[in-house]
Amino acid sequence: MNIRQATPKDAAIIADFNIRLAQETEDLLLEPNTVRQGVEALLKDPAKGFYFVVETSEAGVVGQILITYEWSDWRNGNIWWIQSVYVREEFHGKGVFKLLFEHVEKLAKESGEVCSLRLYVERENGRAHRAYQKLGMEETHYRVFEKGLR
Image (cartoon, rainbow, N blue to C red; front, side, top):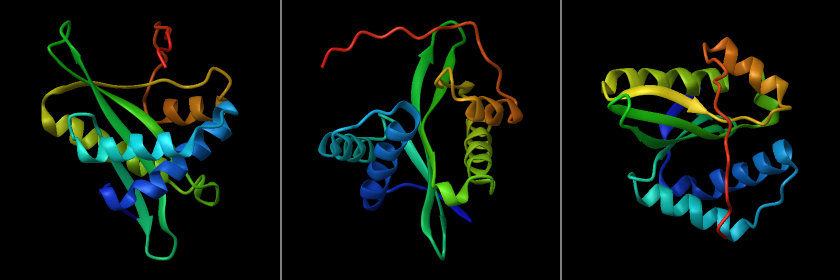
């Protein structure tokens, strides 16, 4: 398995994975053109974040992770938010997410500017909870509130 930073050539597969992710985890149907445009916008503008993908020579891209940023004035550092994690079903349990997470963690530590890695997860997604805990993540006391604007 090879991990690399995603490029605009990966937009179609990343958008497809994001659509699958929303369907599988939230039973949510996303609008494909909106997702594709969102992925393309991020891939063109590193200030928005960056994706890493895992690929194999036989199967192509089999997993992804998105990192976005949040500045913490309390900690004088960046928080990297882990988002849009997806691994093709036939690669579950083969270390794809672990590879992605450890790669991101290594880069974050090397940067000297990242104070924390965070993510949000569906309350009922026990499999994901266990996977994150195995990698040393802990549940925080925060709840997420949102007000949709479009």
